[in-house]
Amino acid sequence: MSIVVQDLALGGDGLSVMVKDTIDIAGYPTRASSNALVDAPAAGEHAQVVRALLGAGCRITGKTSLHELAFGTTGLNAWTGTAANPRYPGYIPGGSSSGSAAAVAGGLCDFALGTDTGGSVRIPAACCGVFGLKPTFGRISRQGVMPTHSTLDCVGPLARDMDRLIEAMGIIDPTFAPVPLPEHLAIGVVAVEVHEQIQAVVNQALGRSHFKLLEQTLPGMSAAYGAGMAIINAETWAACGHLLQTGRVGSDVADRLRAASLTTAKFVEEAEITRRAFTAEVDAALAITPILAMPTMPDFPLRVVDAADTRAALGMTSLVRAFNLSGHPALSIPLESASGLPIGLQLIAAHGADELLCAVARELVRRLEE
Image (cartoon, rainbow, N blue to C red; front, side, top):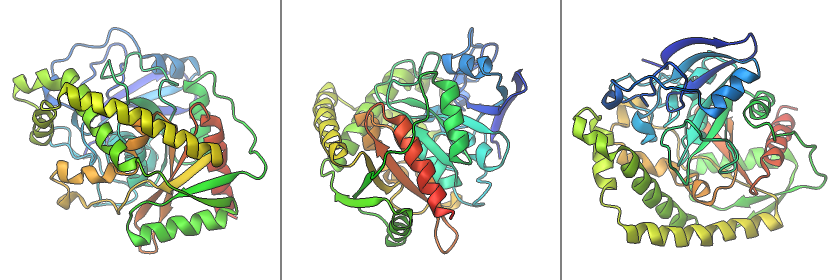
């Protein structure tokens, strides 16, 4: 089962990196793990983030597989093969940045780049037991990233520990500079509907972190989830709908594309109203506590054999998609249940406060390891 769709050896002798195959590397086709793009021409130039990697002396060792056209949450892919989950065999790697998360979990690289339009870095990070960051929308250049136009998508790093994740951010974003942890910082714990065992593990981790904890609510999350779905459907249909004509799009993604074609301008208009309202709601909560916390996923990852229905699995993103809509930075920290299944703890910060988010995550993990 494929994690790497193209072996490479580009760059210097620094950190080894793998890059999701929606990100252009000059001289190689960007196929987004789709048979419909099997004849895609080689990219003419590097994406901006690839130039940043090479400029920092990183060694790019491969392009990673994904859920076809980055339009799915399970990571299953009949054409390239589904990336095996190294730490949790038999369970889905999560999508859409499945290969990037699996490559990090399997020790194939120091860090990897994914993209996150509706949870596509944080979901596979949680499924594979690694760290994954969706930066503030617009903070990391999307030049040379598929799709060309998106109001939701963010390039983000995945790594096995916070120090490496922070190092990765410093490489792909020259404005990123680690900050010290503020004194007396409080975390707002957002009440959400999740599996009781997941909530228990998250609560225990937050309690052991010894940060001040306050209860918070985000009543607009459900509406924001629906609005995020409407916008991703409209934007993905605009970018990829023409590929249905090839007859080579996998059946699960083809079904989603056909459903996405029904998204009307009115749906998108209403979604944008919801976007503004939810963004203001999150901003107001963050004015009380500069970090918000909740699980990354509402339930444990599916087993691969149970995950064939992509649309049925969309509920996996119920706790992450809203922050693509609002554009806030969000990070998934790996935890584990008593039965040995992966759990993600998601932290959210204010727009542009990616450094604070990473500092809190690193300190939280340090305290859990004491």
